[in-house]
Amino acid sequence: MQDKASSVEEWFSERQRVSNVELAVSSPLEAAKAIVAGSCALPGTHIHLINAYSIALAQSSPDYREALSSPAINLPDGKPVSWASRFLRHYPRLSQVRGPQLFLDIFDLGRQANLRHFLLGSTPQVLDALQENLVTSFPGTTIVGAESPPFRPMTTDERARQDERIVASGADVVWVGLGTPKQDYEAARLATSTGITTIAVGAAFDFAAGTLPEAPEWMKKAGLEWAFRFATEPRRLWRRYLIGNFVFLRAIFRQATNG
Image (cartoon, rainbow, N blue to C red; front, side, top):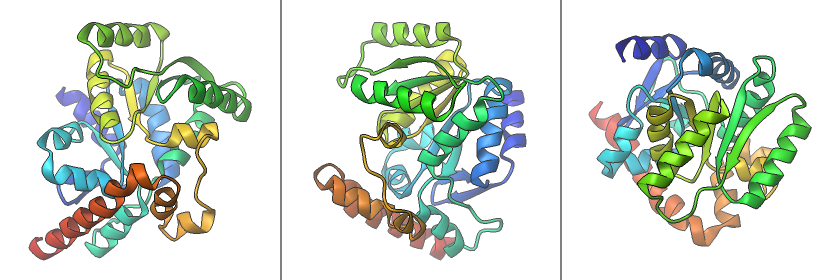
């Protein structure tokens, strides 16, 4: 385990702490290249895309903090997380590594490395559309499996059979799209269980499948993507954004005050 942790540090050696979560300093392209190269060299690593809601959840959940702890690699998905880094006067600062774009970048770059992908999450309909779009957009990409887990808790036997199928597929990367925080727990568990690199990617499946609209480019650049998502799914996301954003801001101000 020590050798593995040391190798992970070589890929993402610069880290910054935002409240009680440690995040890697990387540009989007550097992150994609490192993950493609490391998926075979560093099997068993779990990677998480961290936004303000993730930081808010980590305030009150020791189990969630554990899922995001080393050897996890946490990348700053949300623009507000990169703003927080500036506010906290980090050097070097965290730069946004937007999950849905990282997803596409790795599919693109992964073709040269013959990277084999497994998709876990969402619904069968979304997975069908997602696979069709990915194969069309990135000719030569290799998707070795796709599964939509039941929305109820899985039994121990079901999990074991799922893990066996993933290992048998020969996947180099398992993409986990189950929503936060469920996907982060599952990515951490799967990395340990299967020894395969896992990446928790949230809404990337729906965006790439075309089943959810993405915010306009100007809203992404202005850090208002959360507002667009809130407007499109207010009933499901109101707690995440209204309460979660408050908890996130409180945690950042507390860190700035206490050091």
